Image (cartoon, rainbow, N blue to C red; front, top):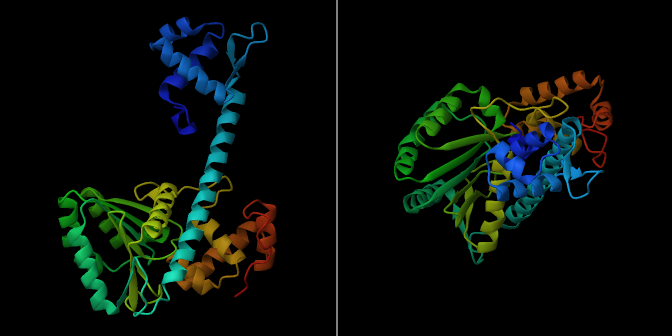
Length: 338
């Protein structure tokens, strides 16, 4: 029951037993929870680290549990701190990957860089993708930031996906949250899941990317025109950064079968991302692309946020977002009116 807050089943059982029998020692607790004394001592160490038990005022050698009211507040505060730290790591990985991508997406075809190969034109890209999928032996990790795809494109990709999954290749794909309202994409994602693939969604993604076997990454040169060209990255350091970016993004993503979660303010990830993008001065057009939605939908999201915040302008929305804690104070308080 408390595993979601970071307690193992044994540690939770010991904590519950201590609440009922606060004066029991290790031996009695071991009997009560049906565990070895060593397991109980390990659980007590964990509870002590989490500040869920403390030395008794009557006997400093005996531990007593804190009340459930205080204990749950401690656990939830700890979990919130961990989530904040994870978000910071995610942002740091995104920033590192964005810098990495920017360094290599402007390469000329004749440039000679170790671990970097330039692909020019759709034919070269398709040929290299075919080779990568043919040679993959372990896993394919994909960022798919283009929003809903056509049913024809997804149907055309099924034979290759089925072949890879049939070979035991692990496939993890990250889509945008916006695909959740698109039936063909949902049906395709369900098909992937039924055949062994894994699909999750996030509010936004930095670029389209395919990584095979943690050793090769293919990234478009121009995110607005993925057919124009791409770079194939094989350098150890570059792949380590890109794989870290994928893993941190994957960890924060929601499985497609789950409902969209909201934060403590009742905001979805898509709404929170829209607020951050508005605060950074992005236009509705750019926000629409980052979220994988139409220009009209991007405007609707902004309008709904203004109505919810009681703001009459986007500048006022920025101020209220900071006041309500929807936006960290360090960000600019004026939002783009474009």
